[in-house]
Length: 105
Image (cartoon, rainbow, N blue to C red):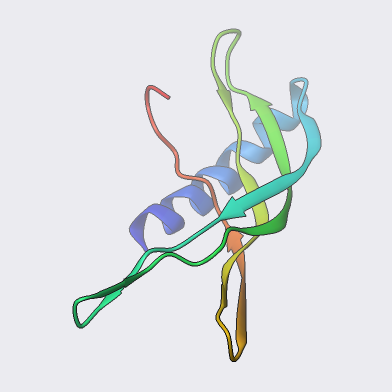
């Protein structure tokens, strides 16, 4: 929670300054391939791979000639499919992800 608050505060404080530089906006799109491993009561199940969509928006805000701030927000679909002789269970999970900030990346 502290990281999210800090990120929002930094974006608000740096936005006016970064808008005077060459700030760029963009979109990203692609596919996500998710799977899970389920272990319960000594039984292990590996469901089939779930293919989903992934997309988002991002901003590249230069802070200096060699350093930029790039916040992003992504929509990602994840899940799995379990199929046996009697039934099929298809689970799709939709997420909004805020990529983690790291130094160095």
